[in-house]
Image 1 (cartoon, rainbow, N blue to C red):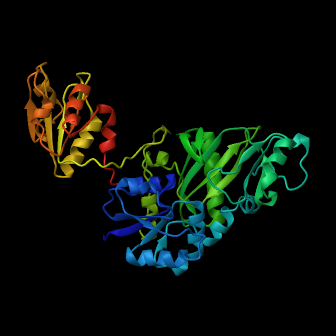
Image 2: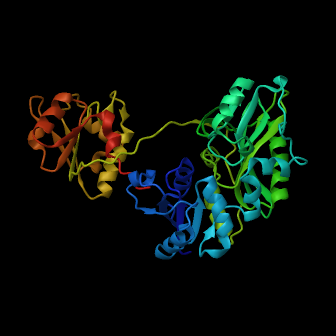
Length: 431
């Protein structure tokens, strides 16, 4: 099987991160990145990020065609709602396949009012307000008809808040609906010729800009029966193919109501990917004409996520010196796995790695043998307690050591040194 070039656009969203993590290190798919902004996250992954105009720009189609030609793009995976919508409009006039849904589907799901109207007799929909609102109707919830990431979405509890909210907004561009008080769910789905091959429901316990940052897989049979039923109704009604998701929320009577349907990768599909469902890989094989099957681990799982930094710095070195006690070997019982990751990154770059230690506890050899890491070092330098590590370091070197005094001596000589708290600043995330 040949290798295929996969364009991820835009490359700076949480959705893009899920796509990247789904395909990194894949033997058949090479990732290409594009962004309309200069500060794309992938710049920090040591990857080239191609500049591409916004989908709303008149030049977008020509720019995209040029990028497809220059980079031999086979597939494009949209990482934003507006991009998914735009690509569905031009799918048949570009020389790359889109991992997404059809124009017809996007015309329905991109607009909340159209979605609710389309499914009004198919799925349970929250009460919508399309006229006068009475005092008894509050609280209500307002959100843009065409929106994403919970932007400009808000609970409104009074006429005063209502008037304040729409002071500088056009009411006709918003959906006004009953405020749902219960648990919110996302159901990640994969379909083949309208048949739902997989659905996996999860909570949205905490969110940030519409992305679930705390989520738990739903194993309740009663709920899952409902989620399966609604997934099948949606997929059959829209003739869905490949990746999609939908969101529902419980009302005050514990009844599920539709929030939205998404025609793209969701930002927290990783929870289902952790069960063994790689939606992006499945969609690519499906587009290539392969029959796709589903296999997953029957486990309960949850996640919490936070911002994870990726650094770019001016540090350049050819030799890595690593201390042992309280640096590589923690609490006299555990290996520092972050440091092991860095060591093998350095070895991948064909640089030298030295273990430099004043260990006097007679446990050095035993620990190195126990963890199978005796031979990963180019040299082991064992010093006396009154010796100086800096004396043994070559030019263009860096020391990792928990000792401030040792680090200061190295820095004073003009070399680099970091503590165990800063190991991640040296990671070169190439994926």
